[in-house]
Length: 451
Image 1: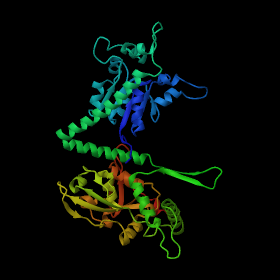
Image 2: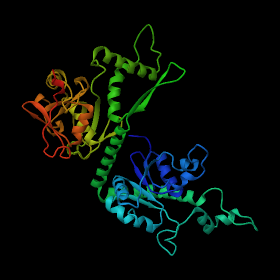
Image 3: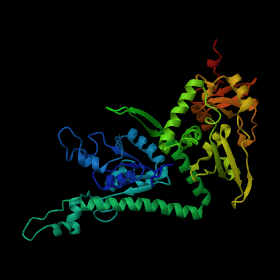
Image 4: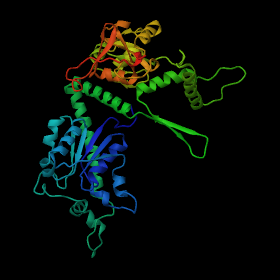
């Protein structure tokens, strides 16, 4: 997971100008995923403020940094339907319309709470939702005038003027930011006391959402540095992918032991050399050596019954968290050593690495499937994992009659549960979801058996 404080938090922002956007921009600075809703007629009005020739508005860019934008017409049923889908998966929603406008256009509190009861709703208006002026619009200048700030900036005998800074809008943004986070944490604390099972389920959902975001955000770039002989490699991996990378690199990254010549390479240089060496070995031999290519070994501490039911996150030996769904998938063909606990934390059993498809069993599996068995996939066997048709966590045997070879992508697809795999006459067949095929006709992959 990311080290950012608000990583995994999703915010939908329908506000404009300063008071709302600054609050959600600070959330983006702290790692939140912020999606800004803008109207189709030119977007947020601040896009047309402080515009230099050939450049976007510096005013808008400053107050909306790190934010994604999408154009929606919230006055139409189609626009509101898209907004409601976004809100259903959000943690925080913010807007600074007049109270009646939000209610009238289908994104008031009463409407959105039906879609997402856990939503933290931030509403910013000029005069609040109650009182004689609750229906009126408000601006920073009006707030400074009514609050006495304009008078403080004016000299006797001069016209009243406001301060250079948007004092009212900026301070409102800070209060909205703090209030949203405080309310979210207060709700968590109440839930932990009133319904601890629900609170635990939410924590697991957050871990799994963070895993999905990390996987969706994976990327790798190999960039030549102009004017030099250097190449820059940078990118992002999810925790599972990083475990595979470390399993391949770590054995080759150790300092070389020699009586005649000490290894003077830095840790970073050793890792760089290991990466190149892994690639050289794959190109030379078509596979990785045993010492550098084993499946990742993870020590997972978890309540075993909850893991089987998919209701518990697991703790890695480095303190990180993995969702139960990821652990169940890794349990097919990764070196997981489960530390099984009672409810009070007493160790019941420390499992051993006994459910891997390796040795003669993997050779038999490769001989049968020859590559990824998922329909139409052309990935060769060396890029595939063994998958338990009946999960090892549910008592499935590590045997050829309970195994199928899958590439990493299709292994994830099967564990997501929409596709199903079965063995018929000793060969794997795949059942598609009903939205792809109403008849759910079984499918096979003849690619690896072509002449």
